[in-house]
Amino acid sequence: MKLRQLQRDEAIVREHDQPSRSCLVIEGFAYRFKAASDGKRQIFSFQVRGEIPDLHSLHLKTMDHDLAALSPAIVGFIAHSDLLELCVQFPGVAGTLWRETLIDGSIFREWMLGIGQRQAQTRIAHLFCELYLRLDAVGLAQDWTVSLPITQEQLGDALGLSTVHVNRSLNGLRADSLITLGAGKLRIDDWDGLKDVADFDPAYLHLRQPKPSLHA
Amino acid sequence: MKLRQLQRDEAIVREHDQPSRSCLVIEGFAYRFKAASDGKRQIFSFQVRGEIPDLHSLHLKTMDHDLAALSPAIVGFIAHSDLLELCVQFPGVAGTLWRETLIDGSIFREWMLGIGQRQAQTRIAHLFCELYLRLDAVGLAQDWTVSLPITQEQLGDALGLSTVHVNRSLNGLRADSLITLGAGKLRIDDWDGLKDVADFDPAYLHLRQPKPSLHA
DNA sequence: CGCGTGATTGACCTTGCTCAAAACGAGTGG
DNA sequence: CCACTCGTTTTGAGCAAGGTCAATCACGCG
Image 1 (tube, rainbow over the protein chains, first blue to last red):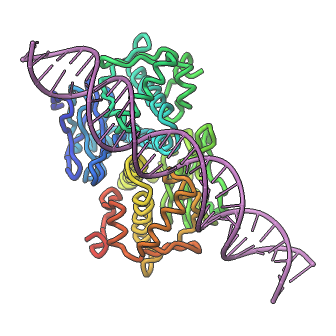
Image 2 (tube, rainbow over the protein chains, first blue to last red; image 1 turned 60 degrees about the horizontal axis):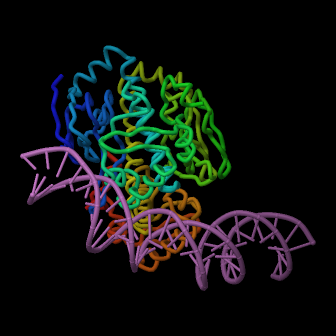
Image 3 (cartoon, rainbow over the protein chains, first blue to last red; image 1 turned 135 degrees about the vertical axis):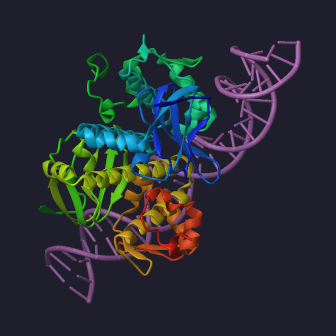
């Protein structure tokens, strides 16, 4: 597999591209977004180790959004032809990959619910709950802490909030001793409290083995 | 295939269900939504004839949202076992179905962009552009008119707006002679004008044969 | 030490929300 | 045909969450 080292904010695939391969996140974070014509942009996913953010390009030839590195990252590229062959030789693979794209969609739905209906603090808290569980699922969480090299502007673009309002809402969460965010790290100081203000139910992540300790 | 006649707002599948079959819309409209704990709900899709709104349940065993009839409708049910068998016997079918679920995701992304970043009038106009094209694609549009039995409350739930604001924004579109909405019908009075305020680019629908007359 | 990016804060403003009342219209029973 | 009802649309008035603009602060880095 062809590897590539990426700088922060470096593009991986762009809207209108017709890629012949998909990208596997090996280290760091990737994110996807789309810009409206007035320049505002919406980020609709953050992708972590082991995910294939543009797997959909296997069946949708033209990209309808951008994919880029959130932080310095390493990604691998897998040719669509190889993926298709894998699917033919091992029928289970097709189902598994399909499932991954369906979970992607499920997360979109949850984000839509958040952006459309929830208040600022709740949205932020919800995102943190989600990212924590997803990172934990691939072994990237220790001591309630995960690496999260994200700016408040990017948070705003993902949540449909202005940078200023993200900042103020974050301070609200800090004041309630729910999280510590800074220096590229997120620490959950009070999971139950955070889950509570987040209105968080992890079912939509379709994790195979929910951690009983977390999902009580 | 087992058919079923549905009343307006009748549930087809519910969150937490574990269906063993998926639903094909044969006549009328279906819609999907999820409610937050404070009772507000987000609608994230309207499904038209020929679509399989809960196809994802083929690989995600537990529903993470509700599916219901928007208007009186007829749906058919297809057992997952039959679908899986079809996929094995005709490999092309799997790809086609997978593709449908990917387009579903693409539409979610566009909606997210709208809800997160666009103004009320733009959102509404965008939705109308999308629905018109999708209905036209299955032959349900004539004379710039489509059947659209939707309330302003449902529009609001889909767009992240209050009913009152939907009403006022609709009046804005009417005042600009862009649309006529009422009596369960939507007529596009000025496609180019509507497309313009909608910031609409149909690429995300991944239609196979975009109509040159419309997409100029 | 000087720079540059990102975080933070203050002041003010706008979009869209809430509450509440009124108008409308299709369907029902008299 | 009319009165009544229920759901939906429309309108008014006041409010608030969140946006905008702009200045300041903090900190890692060369």
